[in-house]
Image (cartoon, rainbow, N blue to C red; front, side, top):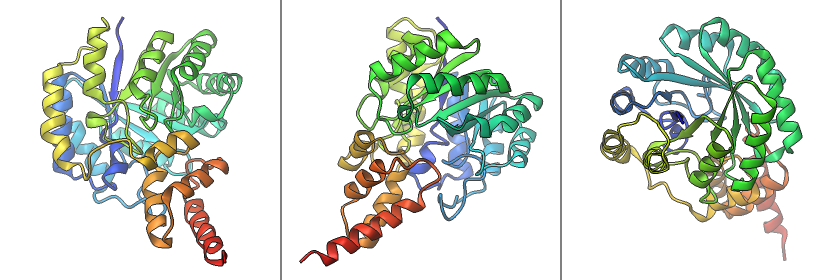
Length: 336
């Protein structure tokens, strides 16, 4: 069975390095991914095209320059971009396409596929491989996910992703969702994991067994929260399981070790706070914001994350983190 591995180090990993990728770093990573035979890899701000902002974090380097550098190194691999409607615009997508991007993943909250219709239609008209990306998929019942996935397919998505943005799912959750989509859709299905409960690889394998043919990973697991399924580990395990990926494992390991490891600001591991992300079902990219707010207001970041989880906050509501932190600090100050 042929699987398509999509590496998100240069997009999801942007969260972990505070959006500080340089042209040289992206070029080196892209060269390694291309030499390793990884079919697709994603480049953009962590929150997708247009994400560089005070709310989401400012990029050190214009993402279009990073995309251009990545494309220039590709002879077999293809570059993907992520776009969240309301953050990225149709003009951003057109600019990326003009630089040679070959795939666009249109990401919405799991119950809001309808806001991605025009972006999916535009991506198809630009000749891009077009993906519907259902974020925070743990928050909706299977029936709702099927409904939203069908919307994406009707707009022209060639692949629909179940996305465990909080790293909150267990293998049975993944199996239920992917199996239901496989029965309901004609298009291909993908899965994107986070490792906040140490389930990323197990969940990815569950997704494949249930019918997913596109799976995401990041080198050294570099990504938001506790990171993603580790691409080089996933490639090795899939080979052992008999799946065809076309990836040169040695080259991929070398790229992870020689290019990605030196630029990491800290080891990618499951800390107490990233564990709480998965436990409370909180968007993985909230972690650094919660850490900043905890330092600013002198409170435990885990308390912030638990409260945000209770509020069922989703991507785009990062401002709530600071409001929650301020409220928690005020309550603590008045306790006798």
